[in-house]
Length: 358
Image 1: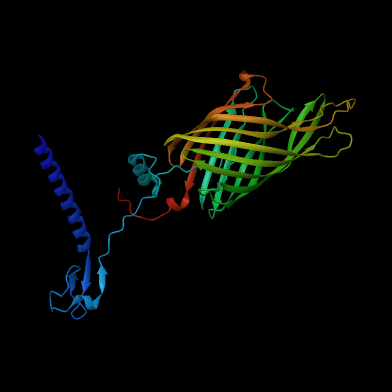
Image 2: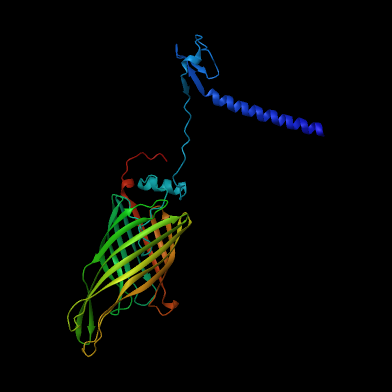
């Protein structure tokens, strides 16, 4: 029994020594010495040139055989099956679209990113549930130089003149201050403004026109850690009202300072879970036509929270679905369902000319 163990240890030792010697020899075999006379490549272990007998120690010119470089793949793995990618490429000519193209916002909360250069984003949707809440929100954005974007969109506001929401058309410009790195978040700055919006209301026998306008600026930051990405920012909204029933006939103005926060979690390659909290302006007009009351127009902030998912049908086409609740609701029965769609069109890849071999 002891002899068997001794033999086994001996064989193992010889095997290890042989493997080590082979590895060392193979490493040395990769190095050669050039002969100073004829230029012949001799093994590094030779002292004399095999071809003309020149002493190699005198030359001392060594040339190492170039080793093959192993390139590490730093790109993210494809998030869509190869069949989906091939289908998209054949149908639309898209190249290397294996990652989803995200809009530069969640439901309503903006993030610190901007659209890619010459990328167009088209979104639309609305909320349904509360009686009178049938508002449709739209968004069209275009990326410029991978540093900024311009957009035409509709903004949601609340007022006591109607049930549900009032929609104001707005235009905005957003620019990214710096990109996201391992240590710092992506940060963007934006300015958005609307024109005067009129609402006509019949009160008694009078037709009264109320006018509203807003402009806001915000800064937003976004940072991702693993499958979780957070968004945080601050918005300053300048709200203006004009009410013909007010005795002074002067527009009412107020600045609203509103923080916003959003979180998105990639639960699988096609689905993201989203949660966000933001604020929207709310108007309260004096609607007393008798002039007996001394009520003034008021401007306040209403908090809105949304929870839902974003599902990607293709890398550039997705849909949003979730539940919205506002601080002015009386209970859960007032919660509304929010739906939307997003189409992100990368024009540089659409018009990229290349043969499709797949």
